Every structure is written in structure tokens, then in C-alpha cells.
Figure 1 (cartoon, rainbow, N blue to C red):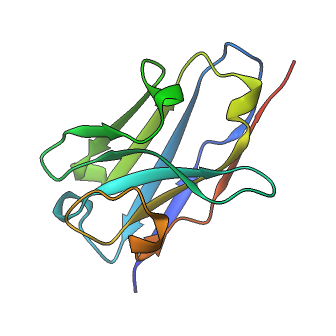
Figure 2: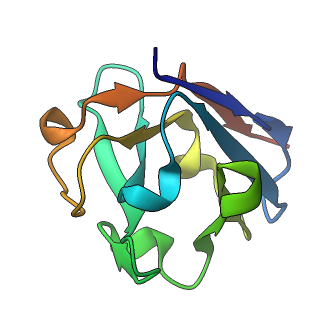
Length: 123
């Protein structure tokens, strides 16, 4: 049984940083592309960025460029989303997703999902 377990969300002030983790069981993350998505209330799930099997980062939103990075720790079977310079508009539930060998912007193409992690950005 495949599970993705997320951690690390919470409340942060504007300009602050957070690191989200996504730890897999039942599959080896280094065999897959892994993406982070976010979903604001009343909106569709939207791709933020993705890491390919080779370690290349693809950004799906300009707002993440220069502020968010994705990284892997294969020994821990974990992927991280490091977020800096957070803004109130970054507030959303963040999900990690995987299941294919290539990155995709469309969330419907992902098979496995983390449980979601709320990020609040407020002073």
C-alpha cells in the first residue's frame, strides 16, 4: 500500500519561511517525478513545481520562482518543499503528488497524494 505522509505546515508571518516534507512508503520516490500542488478555498488544485527523476525542477507558477525549491532525500524516501519570502497569497493547502515517471502540471495525472498540509501566512 502506497502512502505519502506530509508534515511541516502551519502559521507563518509574511516574509517568513516554511519547509514541507512528504515521506513515502510503499514506493521508492527516486523512481518517480514528484510535484507539489496547492489549493486555495474555492479554487482548483494548482501545480506549484515538480522534480523530475533526474533532479530537474519545473516551475508551474511564476510566483514560486526565486522563492520555492524542491529537493529529495532518497535515503529517507522524502521530498521537501522549501518556501521563503512567504506572502498572504501563498495561503493554501499544499499537497505532494506522484505516480508517474514524468512531471505534469495537471493534477489529474497523479496517482498518489499526501493528505494535504495547511499553510497560513498572516501577521
